[in-house]
Length: 165
Image (cartoon, rainbow, N blue to C red):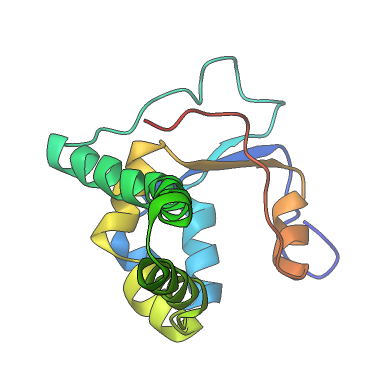
């Protein structure tokens, strides 16, 4: 224990995000972190043994199809849109080009949902849970790196190379 009476983090921990119950995700930040520490896998003797964190999340065919469809639209849509824009630029009319540019601007600058809306409706949605399962999403950290990340400003974590679809 640390001098302030709190638990001093040691060893290595892993949270398999797809296994987090919806009730835990809906808790306040402090209570959620407390609950997550209780369900985290721990290894205080050293790094996790090889292949101990390689399990895949079970995912139904419907959940997988939903993820693949949305990823196709989100990742493939912009590529298709660029090809369409180039085609209109080369072979289209001025009206088609103006319409394409207007649609592009609307798509680029439409308002994003508020943080509250995102946390309430998107972060805990059925589809987000499907994404976690599809990628067998997990956080792994050692020592006090989790606590440091919670105290830091917002950041983007790097993921190892992976394939989608």
